[in-house]
Length: 393
Ligand code: MLT
Image 1 (cartoon, rainbow, N blue to C red):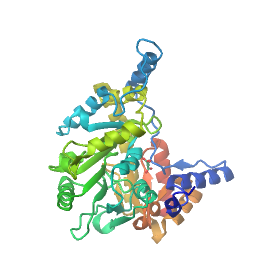
Image 2: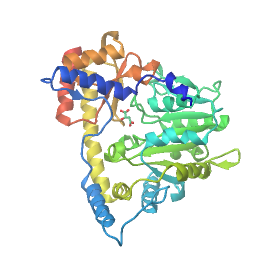
Image 3: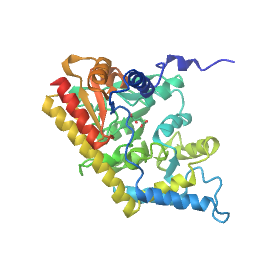
Image 4: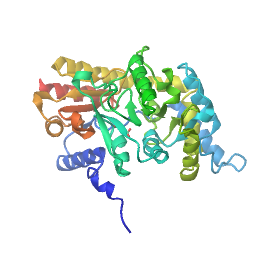
């Protein structure tokens, strides 16, 4: 027996596991300290009442012989796919429910989608980047080419016609930088993908945080995107499903490569390797799109947005360069005094008892930067920013 040696080329542990270990060690040694966590982008508000009621009703159905359900459709129940279809219609995007695939989250789908592509593809990923895009390719032995993001392009890299690519990862609003592409910028990406006969893997997990009406929520708002982009989305950040697990991926019928419809390959992959998301969870997700559910999830998003505003305001007051904080739950700041990302992580943890994510964990170009999330409690966020201001001003 031989192992997949590509795993040995990865960093020893996943970024957020490394941080969790460091924080546990610190809290074990200093149990009296009140540590405020702004590291992993995990929500803190509970599921909204509309979702909870829908799940409770579904639990009751599962406890009655007449309404019990076993295996569901691998692609997801029609009621949820149709609700998502209507949600897209609200952005002016016409999809058929058959183009939508329900899953246990965007992270899983972003990794699993690689099953349907040849290993020969050339992969382009921005740097810094959500580590899952890189690691899932490296695990298969497929190298990636980096696209430089930095202060000079406000962490929104644009296509370079001299670079050849087959698979292109884009995330907007971006994790980790919080920067969001305009329609014009995304249109340039679509144009580049079409010229290269490439496919864009578009991560829209943070679309619900877009508040500027001029910014797109979906890549399909851009003309031509349906023939060159797959979109990944999630209920995690929109509706607090980080622990409940539900997401969706859109593969339009127009997506055809080598004369094959990608949605057919994906359906084949999912029906073989996946048994679907629990009925109870899908009923909860459906409730997100009811008028009551929308009003409640938007209230939670407004709460996190206010945290982001407080964070941005504090950084502005300290004269620190940052992106995000608007249209995004992330703030991506430059480390003070030219510190490197992990040195700042340690200093912030030890001296201010605040946890963030070192930018270098997202790639070389993240060195010297630091990510903070707005998903925390409002009072704790204010307290954390007061501590940070005291530390760096
Ligand atoms: C993050 O902090 O980057 C996210 O929580 C990771 C994820 O959504 O998987």
